[in-house]
Length: 110
Image (tube, rainbow, N blue to C red; front, side):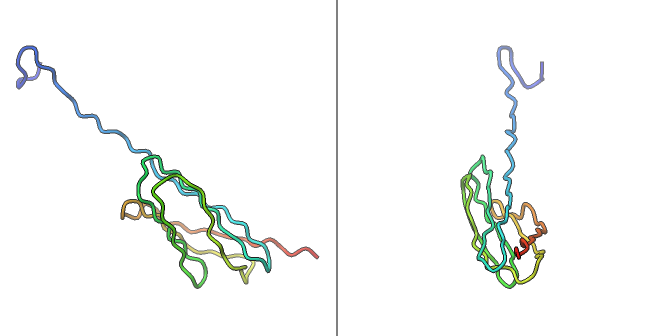
């Protein structure tokens, strides 16, 4: 029995709840000569403030949510067959992840 406890007292232990992580997934729909979109799925079990900063050639796109949801970010048709850029996921004001994404445009059918 711990020294600070008296007979009949119960020792309480603090248990830290493990927070489920925020997850962000990107899925692109990009076709030649047609405006497209990047679909963003946010898994946010703790309803934290999540901001996505997506860098698409020559333009930064931002979206913010505090819930689980899926939404689309409109993009102009890419001028090249492949685009490589970055995105950041910011959770409650702190950068959670910074990644490179790749987009490949579908080839035009002849």
